[in-house]
Image (cartoon, rainbow, N blue to C red; front, side, top):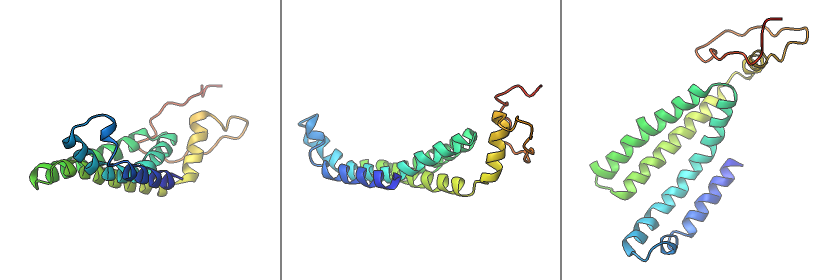
Length: 160
């Protein structure tokens, strides 16, 4: 579904590239810049859709630090240097800045899909029971091995 929405965004951005800026200004320079950026922006949505879904899954498993680290790494360690390098270093200009965003989106989507794909779902199910005290009715879930992301407090009172 995310890929379908991303493809729809690419199609929309490509179809309005010649008219989008004219809705806001008559400046031809702005129109040329918008026409150059909109196809790249549409491609960014191909990465943004799965990246956003993956980020929601990772945060939903009570690992917000992992999601934040992927986003920070992709946008600041990949996207920013690519944008600055293309935009200013190699003289690509305005398009180079947008290509840096595209590089960040692709990197972020790939890393997020990797994190979701390598998630141990049995471990996460037991962890979710422990975090929400879902195994209270007589049987206690066996505590999984801890990692650096297990420092969240329990939602319920563990004293009975």
